[in-house]
Length: 255
Image (cartoon, rainbow, N blue to C red):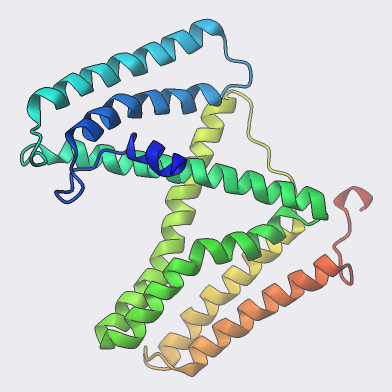
């Protein structure tokens, strides 16, 4: 209930079945304040003047949006005109809550890595990857099995389009934010041979699909799927062996 209530009070909803004018007004008032809180949280030791300025701007924007929502909405039904700002606000706050959840999940994974002595890249390859991809796996499998030829095409497109979006947009946006925050200092990424190994297996899967599909007349069969499964199982097995201590990369400081 606490998590549901905070999300409900900060995400604007214009669905007719869930419409509530008091909730809608509260969400447009509190959403900028939540964004202000996240903005201030990016600083390790924010100055008092910065906090006052950020929270003041957020509060003024929230109050203005609240007054506007109060004057332009009705108790009985959601607004029928100017839905784009409501939908854009709902999307932005949904992404914000996904960001908050992802931050906590990453912190939890790093803590588990410290406690059990597991590399963060190993946790990312297993626990984080499985949890992040489980919904996509169910959706794509359902489309491929029950959707016919078009369903298979949609599933294949989704399998490749999702990682492309995450790598190009998600990673690109994250790096821009990191560089902006640490400017003019560069962003340093620690050398992790496990990460390079993961990228190697990812490249192997892409090359396998690029080679097998044209040779088999762009027809999907067990050869493509079996090869991809073998590559994935090899990557996970190798990582588990490395975790158990049977096979470890040499520390780059000792080279």
